[in-house]
Each structure stands twice: as C-alpha cells, then as structure tokens.
Image 1 (cartoon, rainbow, N blue to C red):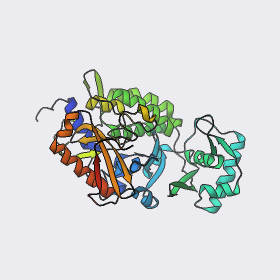
Image 2: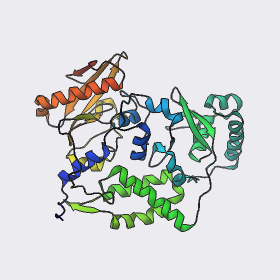
Image 3: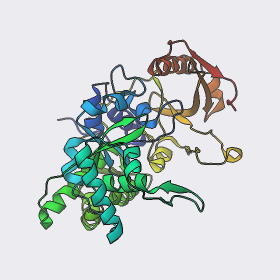
Image 4: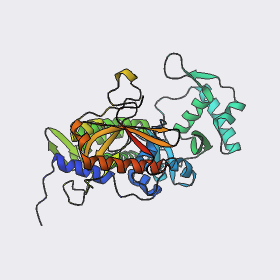
Length: 382
C-alpha cells in the first residue's frame, strides 16, 4: 500500500471544488446530495437557489425548482437557515419546538387558521386575510409592519403545522401537515443531532473547526429543541472527524474521504459564476483561507460603500477564485455582466477570457436566452 499523501491547502482547494461541484444529475438527486439548498428572494439575474442548482442539474433553467417543486420529494424548511431540504430530512427536524412559545391569544388564532386550512386544502395567504382580520404586526425596522396573517402563517410553517405545497408568483401556498411523533429519549435525540451535524459537515467540507462551531450555532434555528445535544456533540466531532492542521488552522472533513486523493478532479479551464450562498462560497472564513481574499456580499450595503457590487457572484476558474461578476438581465432579452478581478492582470489572460465567455453563454441559456445574448461590460452597470 502506498503511503497517504499529505493534506495541503492546495489539495483542500481542489477537494472543496471537486466534491461540491459534482457532475450534473437530476434535480431530485442534486438536492439530496447537497442536503440543503439555501433560498434567497433577490434575482440578480436569478434567485440564489437557481444559481446554485444550475451547476449541478442537467439542463437546469431559472425557475425549474419552483415549477417542479410540487412533484419533488423536497420541502421548504429550515436547517442552518431557510431553504429546501430532501423530505427524508424532516424526521430529524420535526416536531420542532420554537425557542419562543406563543401566548394564548396567538395559539388561539393559529388553531382557527389551522382548522380553516385543513377544511380548505391548499391555501394562499390572501385566502386567510379575507376571512380573518389579524391586523398588522411589527416587522424589521422602527416603522415597518407586516400583515399579521402572513406572519402567523410563517410561524405555523416554522412550527411544523403547515407545509408549503407550491408557490404562486413567488408567494407560498400552504397545506396542513402532521409530522409523526419521534422517539424523544436522550439516545434518540443524540442520534438525530449527530446525523444533522454530519449532514452539515458533508455539505460544507472541508471546513475550519471554527466554522463547524458557527454552523452548530446556526443549526439551533432548524432544531432549537436539540440545542443541548448539538453543543455536546460539537466537541465530540471536533475530536473524531478526519482533520489536518495547516498554518495554525484545524480543517475537518467527511469521514471516509481523503482530500489528497486523485479522485478529486477539477477542469482547469472551466469558469463558473457562483451564487453568494453556494456551498463553496457561503463560509466566508473558509473562502478567505482557501483563496486569500475577502469576498463581500453587499446587497444590503449602501451603494456608495460597495467595493464589489450589489450582488457580486464569485468567479471560479478551475480551482482558483479569481474575481467576481455582477450580472443583470436587460429588457428580458440580454445578459450584461461586469467582471472584476482580484489581480487586475488577469483581465489580459486570453484563456481566462474565453472561459468566462463560455460561462456567460451557459448562463444566458440558463436564463432561456440565446447562447450569444450576453455582453461583458468594461465598467459596472449603474
């Protein structure tokens, strides 16, 4: 048997790219393999979930997930944040106990709405608003309010009383759901928490030990009722997972995988624009450690303070993150993209330029445009 090759930052980069950008497959299989796809409502030029899936699903076009969702074995739900999970994950998440219990009045309103939805079937929020006068409630900010029925439906969905059956023009349509009871003894709770943490490791591997700690905290959003178990298991996993220490950082990865193996292959000529919440990008700590520069998501940053753009998409070339692109769909007919580089000399690299044009052609097709319906701008579009 040949000795195992040492794990270096170069091998971790290749491993990270190859394992998460797996060969395109079906939509169902891609979501099952990812374990979770984060959702975001901003379209720039498409929603984050679509931008994530287009690299991993054969023939994927923008909006496929929403169109095909009712027939998929997939649920909108919460894990470390909000998105889409395989239905097989639900027994690990539910019954969910929210960190803040409702008061008696809210419990009463929820019971009335649940009875209404059970009797009606698939229910749009406006159907609830037409029957129940719940008023408005405080939203984010000092002066923003939200329709109270919409907020109540969202809370009922989070607590597992409702599920999303489809979306109508982006709005969630609900139905009642009953999650089966689960074994709640300490050993069973421990096993569920461990399975969820390992699912997170598998999604974001390789990851710094500090990032696993952060993700364990975020997991309390999806399973607040397993908070104690996730805290206990964190130390156990940090000690037992495969790992290597590089430049003072402890890296962890999925059991049974060797980051230095030749099986992890990356096309060195392929360029990709990634969603800000793509699993390869989401962990900003890991991103900076692997590629040596700080990626910033600036959609909520005042325009005058942005350095990369409103919705910068990290640009990958082979296993190198070389820059970013801001993309816009103009008049529903043409894709316009401004590309920025970490190293400005890369703008003169002919091979990289061809790779970027190839990626923009694929993105145009993803947006259901002609493959040549794109323009690379010399300066950011205002």
